[in-house]
Amino acid sequence: MSKYQMIAPALPNIPWQEKPKGHINSPLWRYTENPVIGRNPLPGVARIFNSAVMPYEGRFVGVFRGEELTGVPHIYLGWSRDALHWDFEPERIPFTDEEGKPFMPIYAYDPRLVKVEDTYYIIWCQDFYGAAIGVAKTQDFKRFVRVENPFLPFNRNAVLFPRKINGNFVMLSRPSDSGHTPFGDIFVSESPDMEFWGRHRHVMSRGNSFWEGLKIGGGAAPIETSEGWLLFYHGVTQTCSGYVYSIGGAILDIDHPSIVKYRCQNFLLTPQEWFEERGFVPNVTFPCATLHDSDTGRIAVYYGAADSYVGLAFGCLDEIIDYIKANSKTTSDDTDIGRR
Ligand code: BMA
Image (cartoon, rainbow, N blue to C red; front, side):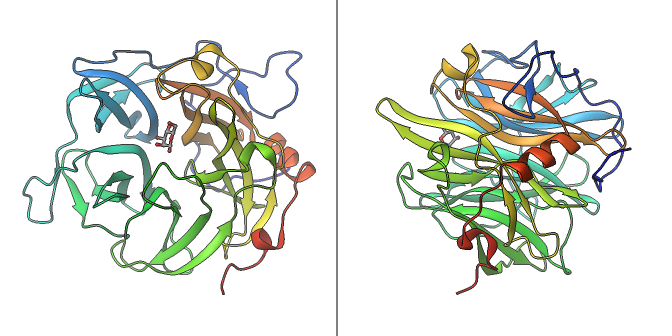
């Protein structure tokens, strides 16, 4: 019997490997065949990383950050039977406006993919006179309609909750300045229609621990559990040779997600393998999605590695929640409602 419940559909065919013997120091362990997506994954794209996947009609679909040969990132669609081997569509996702006219972002990166009710939402970072949040919706993965700039710049790492809370759509985001942000906290906003956003509240600040002392940002869409919303996010520290991006874990209140119930003071995963430490940007592990099965409590975390590859890590709901609780350290900024 599992200790905690995952409130999500059963998804028995997600990638999985048992925890290796002797594994210590984290409730997450890596897939032995990592990275799951290597360099030059399709013509015209040098690297795929920071990408998100979902189940769709018996197979898996993904939105992938494809770094083109000019160095500019755009979003590509991919399909898979096993969520490990991917066939990518050769062209960028053709976003349109509400009238069906082409409406392509100048660049697009770090996509997330979340289903709310009968619609799939792609959320990413794009240029809107500075880094800002892009959103598009689709129901069939053929027609992708962009919602016109839902947030003001400068903002990134938008992560949608997989269901409405108290009747509204709910999105995490990480406002910042115009540069490669030397700071950043996570906020939450509500919307009745995915277009107009308000009731912004503070969720969590950077920096309880050294590994997340510089900035943080939402990662995978939160997983609904009997303990609250399980959030995998990224935390950044500054070293004398650059930023290091690790994966952290927190549990947010189910009805009021601006309240952090538990926040793990230890990272859950930090760069240590060659594909995480070596690449276009060394020392980056950047979670953007999970596949999870409510029957077994299995969770597969998809993360970008070194801005060059996609990696996969596994964990069990009970162990992850117990680990976050056992190592939780929160501040009043985390645990309050975030309204001033
Ligand atoms: C962040 C984002 C991510 C990237 C990371 C490390 O600010 O731009 O896309 O993975 O930097 O370069």
